[in-house]
Image (cartoon, rainbow, N blue to C red):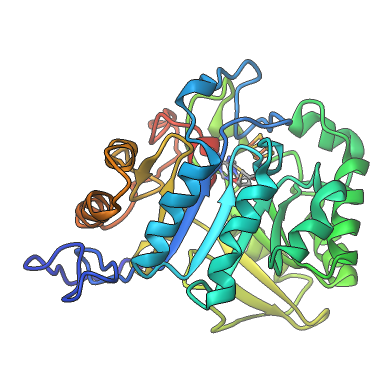
Amino acid sequence: MNTELSKNANNPGTNADQRSLVDPFARPISYLRVSVTDRCDLRCVYCMAEDMTFLPKADILSLEELDRLCSAFVDLGVRKLRLTGGEPLVRKNIMWLIRRLGRHLDTGALDELTLTSNGTQLARYADALADAGVRRINISLDTLDPNKFRAITRWGDLDQVLDGIAAARKAGLAIKINTVALRGVNDDEIDRLIAWCGECDFDLTFIEVMPMGEIGEQRLDQYLPLSMVRADLLKRWTLTESDHSTGGPARYFDLEETGQRLGFITPLTHNFCESCNRVRLTCTGTLFMCLGQDDAADLRAPLRAGEDDALLAEAIHEAIGRKPKGHDFVIDRRSNAPAVGRHMSVTGG
Ligand code: SAM
Ligand code: SF4
């Protein structure tokens, strides 16, 4: 369902007063996701190769530079910031950046400051996150079975994540669990995950595995179309399509039996690009205008060219003017190569 988007060829990337970002297909860009590090304390099999090579520390922007970049986007009308990674909570002094960005919540310039995390460090950080103004958090969890968890993450400890989730809950953070649907791995646990999230009052979103980066495994073996998951769920649960939207890629369904909301992110079986409101910044200052395309803009050079943000704003407008209509993800027997060479951890999903 790819609705035709009208191309605003006369005015790409800008609106009249230059204080907001609108892409060539008239989509307002109000959401920035920032991968604050490409490093992670886990190695999920669909995300990274076991022997990942990480960026040299010298290439990574400082926290001060990340603050300046994020703040430039806020000045240009971005209303929502999500920190991700790699694992955002393994970046040294990350709370400094989060507290610093919290000032935009205080002024009302930002509606939401949030994170996507694997949960391993949450027991340590949950209270500080809540203090800094974070109200909700997405936590990735693909299984409730400790052995499977270790196999999926290559060495993770499920209890550490469950403790982190408990701490986040205690700190009053609203929690959404993200689960990547993996054929032959967690397809038998879908009902259990739904029931557990229902009991804990967590939202739950299922994600289709996306063909990003070489991972030393066959994507086709991992890929479980969510259309199949949903069809199977309908045999046991009553799902009604909901008009709830976060302006993002998920389609939501209300689950009558538990009163929960279930999300489905289906880049492969249902293209979601027509409502895309987001761009992604890496920890080296590269801006990706689309998760599924290679085109990118370097913001580090204009950032470092001087203290004035004018050059930076110009570079951001120019980049938004190049935002493509959508991605071309496909996983089948003929196209088993990654759609893009970079791993998900570069842009953080
Ligand atoms: N480390 C954090 C975490 O796991 O939540 C944040 C970064 S992680 C790259 C963000 C999300 O991307 C996670 O929910 C993860 O499951 C998902 N992800 C990673 N690689 C993926 C892939 N190839 N296809 C679909 N989702 C993927
Ligand atoms: Fe790390 Fe998140 Fe990727 Fe898993 S999905 S390896 S936790 S970045």
